[in-house]
Each structure stands twice: as structure tokens, then as C-alpha cells.
Amino acid sequence: MVVNFTQAWIDALARVSAATIVSGDARNAAFTPVTLDAGVLKFRHVAANRTSRGGRIILIGNGGSLAIAMHIATDFALAGWPAIAFGDPVALTSHTNDFGSEANFSKQFELIKLSYADMVVAMSCSGKSANIIDAVKFARAAGNYVVTLTGFEPDNPLRLLGSLNFYVPASEYGFVQLAHESVLHAACDIENGWSP
Image (cartoon, rainbow, N blue to C red; front, side):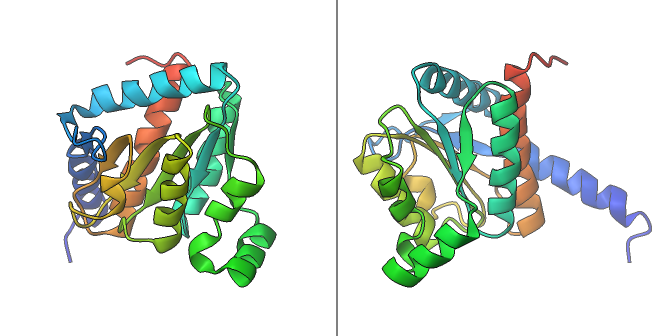
């Protein structure tokens, strides 16, 4: 056992978070890396632009990623960005039952009449969650701006679908999820006027 396990864990999280890789739209063959700071600023710019035109930020994820989505949706709304997370257990379970687990988020997009102005934020540690991938494909077909946050393998399928893609090079759920939450908090805190 490491003598100072907690400090070693926090130091490892800091290294992983700082190593987050940000890239542009892979779908249009513009999978160009940008700095983490540029990626967060791009996120903030798109979010402010979309919501100022009547759009919403819609966050999706499974398990811990859904918990982060629900938390961040509240913070985004407090920052003046209309945001929702698809965390209603009735909708999730009924759509899973009626349309299959892969469609439980995309069906919600259909029912709320996803607008072109909306921005979709999709989180999946593995980048392989079938329901997240299905929802992102639905959103991209509707012309939405999609932000992905993934981890684990660098060639995960979700990372190849976004307009803006944050990839955390780690295989531990805790590190990946906390890095995702940190990226989203940073964008929100910039909007709230925080500065170092």
C-alpha cells in the first residue's frame, strides 16, 4: 500500500486530466487536435451562441456519466445556458421497454423535437455505449452540434462522431468521469466570470 495513497491518487488524476486530448470533427475528416484550453473555449463559445438563439444544451450519459450530466445541466442553467439532462427514470425505462435499450435517448430527442439550435453533450467512459452512439447519430442527422467526452481506448466509436471531442487517456472510470466533469465545469466557470 502506498504510504500517501490519497495524494498519489490526486496527482494521477491531475496528470490524466491535463492529458485530455481535444479534437475537431472526425466525421468531416477534420480530426485536428487542439489544446485543452482551446477546446473548452470552443465549447463555451458554441454553448453561448446556441443558447442565445433559443437552443438548449442536452446532456446524456449512463450511470455515473448520467449523474454528472444531471449535475452539470443544473450548473449550466444557473450560468444562463438553458440545459437539461435526460435522467427521468420513467422515460428511460419505458423507452427501453417499448423501443429497445439502444433507442432510450434517441426516442427522447424525437419526442422533444430536437431543434437545430440545440447542442448535445454525450458522455461515455468507454465510448462504446450503444444508446449514446444511437442518440449521437440521431442528433448529427438532425444537424446538431455534438460534443463527446470519452476515455479508455483512443479509437472508441463515440469519439469519431462528435463536432468537438474530449478524450481522456485513462482506463479508470473515476479518472475519466472526473476529467469529464472538470472540462464541463471549466466551460461553465468561464461563463460565470471565473479567472485564475
